[in-house]
Image (cartoon, rainbow, N blue to C red; front, side, top):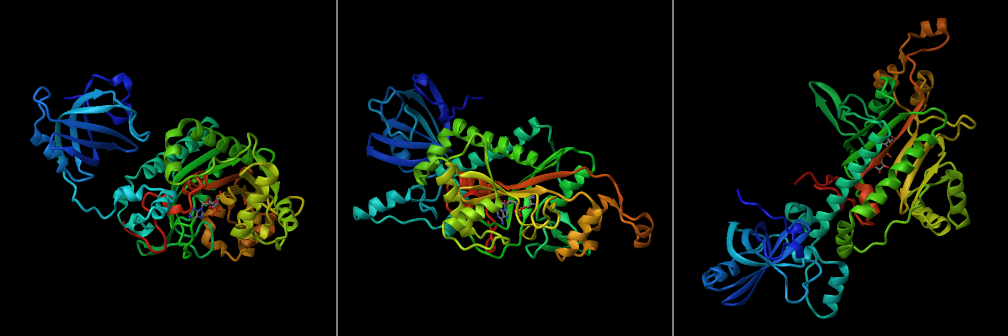
Amino acid sequence: GRVWTEIADLDDAAAGRSVIIRGAAQAIRPVSKKMAFVVLRQSMCTVQCVLVASVDAGVSTQMVRFATSLSKESIVDIEGVVSLPKEPLKATTQQVEIQVRKIYCINRATPTLPINLEDASRSEAEFEKAEQAGEKLVRVGQDTRLNYRAIDLRTPSNQAIFRIQCQVENKFREFLLSKNFVGIHSPKLIAGSSEGGAAVFKLQYNGQPACLAQSPQLYKQMAICGGFERVFEVGPVFRAENSNTHRHLCEFVGLDAEMEIKEHYFEVCDIIDGLFVAIFKHLNENCKKELETINKQYPFEPLKYLEKTLKLTYEEGIQMLKEAGTEIEPMGDLNTEAEKKLGRLVKEKYGTEFFILYRYPLAVRPFYTMPCYDNPAYSNSFDVFIRGEEIISGAQRIHTPELLTKRATECGIDASTIASYIESFSILLHLILISIYGHHCSYGAPPHGGFGVGLERVVMLFCALNNIRKTSLFPRDPQRLVP
Ligand code: 4AD
């Protein structure tokens, strides 16, 4: 077979080499009957290919005409010789040209695609500049993009976004594996809701009512009960959200971890600290091209973070908000607006846009959260923020069946619907037996805690993108089930 060349590998050192390349014809520019340019694209890279009719090179005027008749986005094979351009090319393409010897069309695209990729790749600033110059350019709306996602995904920024996403996921695994976590897969078809609340998709499972897992929460804890000291999972999470926001999806990728705690739940925060500092460093050092590409269409400031992640108590957070004039209920939850404001205040005071807020009021946390030992109105829990928006929530969990049953009941959850979960911590003793033994019979679950991260949110907020749909390959929101 022939040796196919990747456009990304074409540099000065390739000059003089004969190559064969397959790509999409991004642009076709006729110059004369005897000359034309075809810009070939592979993912984020393009290369300019030059056709010049010449007997020596075996290129006919018919071939030049054929090239100029190609439609944009057609899949094309080009055989040619790499040459150095006479003048520097646009910074967005490889700095070499291909002198075309042969050109084949593998699949011709229709001349009128539903999305014009040039428009779909422009930045807002470019649109504004064009408008000021009196040019009329059409913005490609979010719905149109998502309706024709397979075309929309070809823009350089989309190519970059999903490469970044893959790197975050990969680094998550790599880091946790290096800390002795074991990767697991928990069921997504489950009997009761895993996070409580109404946001659950219900379905029939062989005649029984069932639901789609809202998180691996209960099962990752059961894996800890099962003797795995540290576990992580990367998998789909389903939430029957009925609010249309810029940061909620009905299906997202959950990055979850759960671990034994030896002395303090800050051990979980330390893992998050090391993990995210490693992820941010990796992206900044090894994904420069991707970040530059995203920046071209969606300009953003690099994320400010500290080598040692800042931790603030919830009370300190409330205090900062109060001092800045925000009325806030001290034992209630923070709304989106208050979170954003706190993000700005923390950035001003501590110079970081990534921080942990811990010791939340117990009342605003899920039933499985461990109350604080010194004051049960608070809990051993935390949220983590990037640029003032939540990306992680985590906590120490209750590991004794009595307290678990009590807290579930207090939170309005019928303990019988999560009996098998509670049973992982103890044998379910009949009330009469409890009165004899005086307590539940514990199976011996170790103290443990963990956290859950939304992958799409991490990428959205690291790159300061304005909508989570931009970081989901085929987003599922309350309105969208196709494509
Ligand atoms: O805050 P959540 O609901 O927490 C849990 O699922 C717990 N079981 C985690 C734990 O281990 N204690 O979800 C965790 C993260 C959020 O911080 C957010 O990043 C993301 O998942 N998330 C969503 N992402 C996109 N769309 C949604 N509807 C999301 N809901 C939560």
